[in-house]
Amino acid sequence: MNLKKNNIPSVHNYCDRWCERCRFVDRCSVGSSEKLLETELKMDLAMTEEKRQEIMWQHVADSFAEAGRLLDKMIADAGLDIEAIRKEAKENPPQEPPLTERQEVIKELTMEYGKDVYGWMKNNKELFEPEALTSRALVQRDDPERFMRNIKDAIETVNWFCFFISVKSQRACSGKQEDKFEEELIQSDFNGSAKIAIIAAGRSIVAWEFLLKAFPEIEFAIIGYLAQLQKISRHLLLEFPDAQKFIRPGFDEVKYDHIQ
Image (cartoon, rainbow, N blue to C red; front, side, top):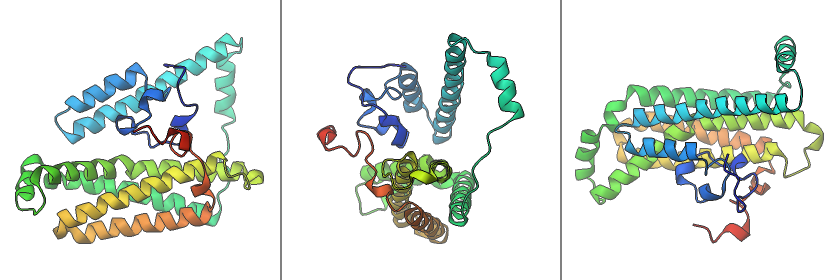
């Protein structure tokens, strides 16, 4: 891990994990790692969106594996018995705190949205093939090159956040239950997780709205996903009324506003 002096502490905890688009990537202990830079280069050179997704998920898997190795080393350096700890964890797995009725709804809605979008994108790949998009771009009033860039951005945004929203929403819900005696603290982790989930839902809505204009023939499907996202956002805002007040390191701090 690259720990630079000018890194912003904890900036990666409440970001969207989209390092290649982040203005703080050079000041993030996670984003500035050599492994990530190598992954981004591979993604840039990938010829298809499917290959880009494969590279991205492999990076996620490698990151978890590396985190596990570092944890094992920390335990060993502390003189603790790793095998005993693993055995204890296996025999007594941590119990997830029970969720409230609304939290269960949020969990179900976000998981359903992610699965629906992933399945739909997989089954409609022909819509987004380069030749099909080029033909569509040529009949648009907008500049063809700009249209293609916007299409690419919208598709990437929808794909990137389809499961991310669920992961962060569930972290927020379980975190709130674990910290239920600290609900008045705006800077609680669950508020930060909820905020980035809400942001991701909002950006997904904008992306789907563009795709709705570009692909009017699939209006029914897109309107359904927009309705799902609006419902998710509404439940998150009701469950986490202080989430929007949470100050994310770097992103929501005035002293970093000059960084583009």
